[in-house]
Image 1 (cartoon, helix red, strand yellow):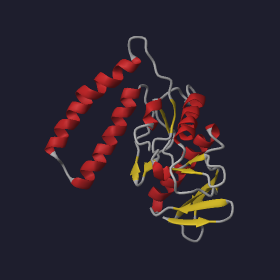
Image 2 (cartoon, helix red, strand yellow):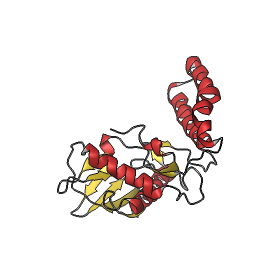
Image 3 (cartoon, helix red, strand yellow):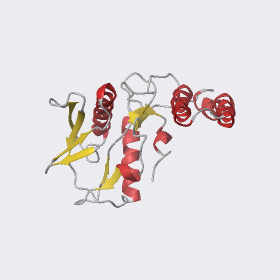
Image 4 (cartoon, rainbow, N blue to C red):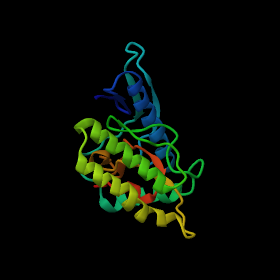
Length: 213
């Protein structure tokens, strides 16, 4: 991925070409735009996305530039930012469901963000999508297939279904979903955590903690 920087703008030109690359840049913009609405002091402001005029198979995403260090963020500040995003966005899913309105990508893997009525349903679809990619990359595995069946038939229903039955409910909030040290860096001047490269979706608040630093 090429990274071209100026004094106040960061431009990422995607390495994936064609329709897939365009979909990735569109998802990035929509994801960052939604996240920015709830954390404008901690998310680089999205400016534009589109297709390169002279290279129609290449696509880009543009946002405000931040000078960041390569250190880990202050843990208290980082957790406070994530908690604020969750609290401020809770219950504001545009249709009250789990998911996102466009496809986002973890690296080159497209997520199944289609809208779901329950957290169990969304989580099952999302996990199944990752397992499909695993099989596509490494081939079928009988042991993994057996474990997968138990996961979907026993583990997921037992752990997630009780969260939304018996009068209990979850209010979906906005999730970054790819919080690892490479996507959270301290601002070089303020030391404030800067969060970027989200694969946002509306889900259970603990969905952000799965890959956190």
